[in-house]
Length: 436
Image (cartoon, rainbow, N blue to C red; front, side, top):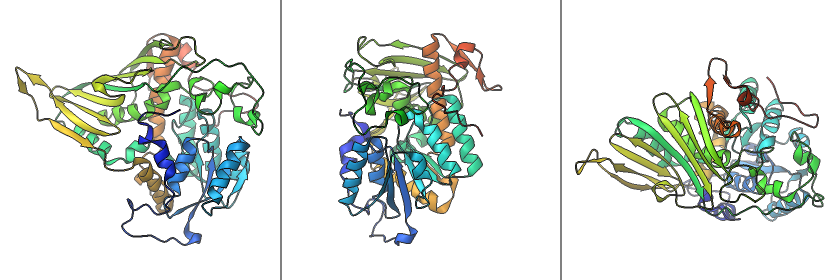
C-alpha cells in the first residue's frame, strides 16, 4: 500500500544510505566507534525500518541488534544492513535484546499493543528509547509509560516527528501570537483516499518463520488471520485504535499545542463503517468526534476512501479565530483572513512551505539528548505523547460507548462506568499491565 502524503514518501526516507546528512552538518562529522550510540531495533517491518534508516544517517548512531517475531523480515533487514557494512545480532524475543549489554538505546516500532510493555521493560533495563506513536494503546498504558520514564530517568522520544519541522513550530508561534483573535473552534482531520477495503480472509496457519504467540503477546488469543498482521493490525481494537490513533496523534497533537489545552471536559463521537461496511476491519472508517475544552471546541474528522477534506486538504489542522483561520498540514501553513463587509479583519499570510525533513531532525534530536541528558530538549517526550494519545483514546471511548462522556480530572476517570471499562487495555496470556 502507498500512503498519500505519508512521510512525504516512505520510499524517499528509506532510500537514503548516507551516514552523514548534509542537511544537519555543514561538513562531515566523524565520531569514534567507541562514542557511537548503539541501537537495538525492535519491530523492523515498516515504520521501524524507516526510523532506523534515519537514525543511521546520523554519525552518532550505529545499529548492533535487530529483533522481530517474523524471521523473514529479520533476515531481510540484517542482510540489507550487512550490505552497508553493518553487522548486527538478531533476536526474535525482545527481552534477549534488552539483556544485551552492547545495546545503549532501543527503537520500538511494534504494533501498538506492545509499546507499553516493551518501553517500560527497556527503561527498567537501563536503555534509552525511541518509541513509535501512539505511545500507548490505552489511557492506563500511557500513564504507566510516563511513570516508568520518571522512575528510571531514561530518555524517551516518541515518533511524532512533525514536532521537529520548522514550519509547524512557526505555525504554532503564529497561533500563540493572538493575531487570529479568539479561537473558538479547532478542526483536525485525516481523509485517506488511498485506503481501500480490507478484504475478508479466512483464518489460517501463521506464515513460516513467524512466532505468532509472541506477536500476540498481551492481546487476546485468536487464530492467525492475515488481516490482523503487519500493517492492517491498525484496524482492530485488540492491537490499536484505527485512524483516530494512527493519524489523530499527529493532527490532534497540534490542535492541543496551538490551544495550550489539557484534557477535555466532555467528548462525544459518531461514526461507523460507512465507506466499506462489509470489509474486514473493526475500527470506524468514518468518524466525527467533538471535544469540549470549556473555552473552545475541537472537532476531529476522519474518513477512508476520500481525499478531499476541509480546505481541500486530505489532512491538517485549522485554528478558526474571529480575525482569521490558520491552516497547517505536513506541507506548510497559511492564514486565511475573516472578511466582514468586504474588508479583511487581518492580513493574509501566503502558504509557508515545509523546508526540512522532520523525521531526520527528530531522530537527530533523540540522539543529541541521549548524549546530553537534557530531557527538556526532547521534541516529543513521553509525557507530551501520552497526553495526546490519551485525548485520542477518549474519542475512541466515546465512539465505543455510543454516548457523550465526561472526564473527572480530579479522579482521573470518566463519570460513566462503561467508559471506565475501556480505560485500560486488557492483558492476556500471562502478561500484566505494568505498574510503577
